[in-house]
Amino acid sequence: MLALVLSLLSPAAQAFSDDEARRAIIELRAQIKQMNEQSQQARIQLSSQMDQLHQEIASLRGRIEEISGRPAPAQQASGPRAPATADPQQRAVYEAAADLYRNGRYAEAASGFASFVGSYPDSPMVGDALFYLGSSQYASKRFADSVKSMTTLVQQHPNDPRAPDALLVAAISQIELNDMKGARASLQRILDDYPGSSAAETARNRIKLL
Image (cartoon, rainbow, N blue to C red; front, side):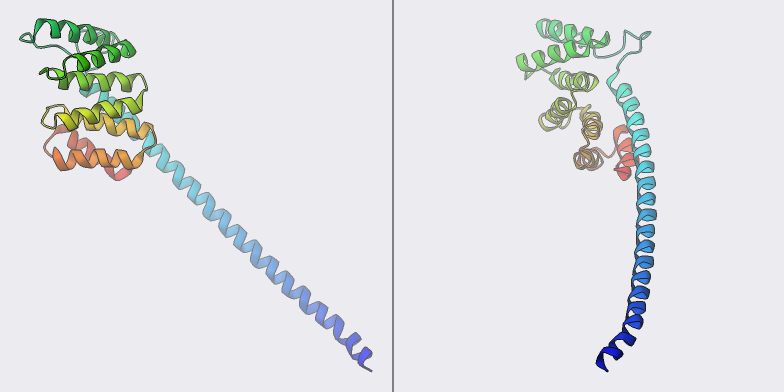
């Protein structure tokens, strides 16, 4: 008798199990579909953010070329210049590096400006030399070195007229290094310490995107 009851219940139990399994599969498929849709949306959003960031990097690169005076082929007279009142020996070393910079020989210019900074740390031109050292390093894609040079300029000469622009170059170098936290900090320092500078407007427009 017991065997008969079990035999009668078994098909019903099996049917119940199949229904539950089908429902579980349907729910799982729905969950997977939702996850795929969310993942696709996230990828689209990330792609949009990256495109926007790349546009901002291009814009900042243009700004860096503007503030550092990197010359176009027809503008070889632009770029760094030593003041006429400078010490003749210092001026000669500075101008040698500056000539290299104006002619687009940035790796050699970086070496020249580094030599100037090392030889004449108390020179009234050391701020400019540090700035163009960092700019030369940036142009040579030595982004970490550029950040170091620009940070040194700001730390040692916070009242130098080029300090806010130095922070801007540091920020774009940090973006190139994928150091978004560092870039935000550099841009925020421009806003905090140099709110009236032309670099502050650029920093204000860009910091929200990082």
